[in-house]
Image (cartoon, rainbow, N blue to C red; front, side, top):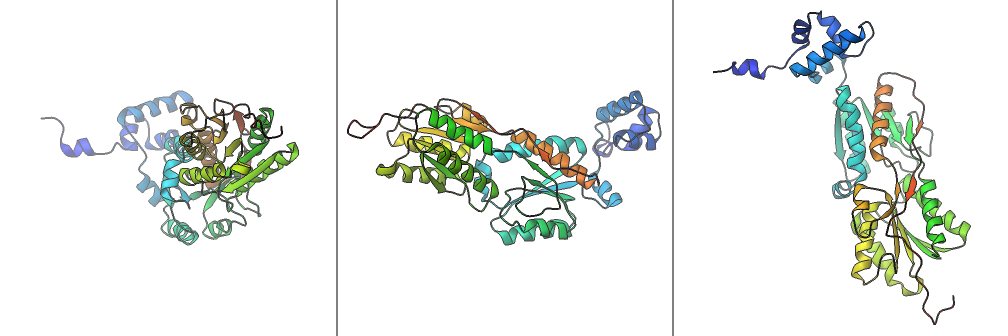
Length: 353
């Protein structure tokens, strides 16, 4: 009839691994936690036996014995629809999970609608000891979360550099070069009227990209406009309609602060009877997987969101362990040129060139 239900459901323990390996439980613990004192061959044999038995760390038991939760938190003050629709976040989380899965850690994710709910969520996570540290994303001007999280005794890592003193290490990507390269690319194609559909002005990375765009246009002497949005496809599409409706100042190129808005812009332009890139060039940001599969394929600024998540997780785990951590700069953003950008359209014959 097979083994009893209770035996079949019981989790393998360190004692089971030790018995199979013919070593002490202490040696197994050292091997599983990658501590010194175990030779390479023995460690590999113990790890192989643990994998064969299906052993996994009991986070509840570890939490009780160490007063730690073995979990990290990511709280996003964004509409859930925006989080779900932006490819950056799944890619970033995939990078985080890549590190946490091998470290026996978990990720606690929360999406909240307001700063007050955000602050309450951090307090709840800390008071209930649900996380040992948090990722601080979407940095804002004078970000109050830095002081709050420090007062709660949580470790943290910031995604980007705050504009105020911070007690936490930062993991960042220089996105300015990518924005400047986009403007330079469009100017080389003959565009002299370029718009930027930006993100929320409250967020530092949206401000930084806007400033980089404006300076790049000013340096090259081209007309430019900026429309702020909430980073959503809906508002990206609305911004595109407004720009195209202004016949007197209609841009010949638009660069967007993420790929989702750029793809919405392509759809709006094509529904309006415009050719992309014949009548309007469009560029995105993030170089998401879909960017190369839409038609026309999307010119975009590439950042490695998966590696950003992995690097942030490694940094936060090291901070929780008490290691001295320096800020980390990842590879800068770079422009990937595809089909959605092309030569500027010739002006009508009755207009001066």
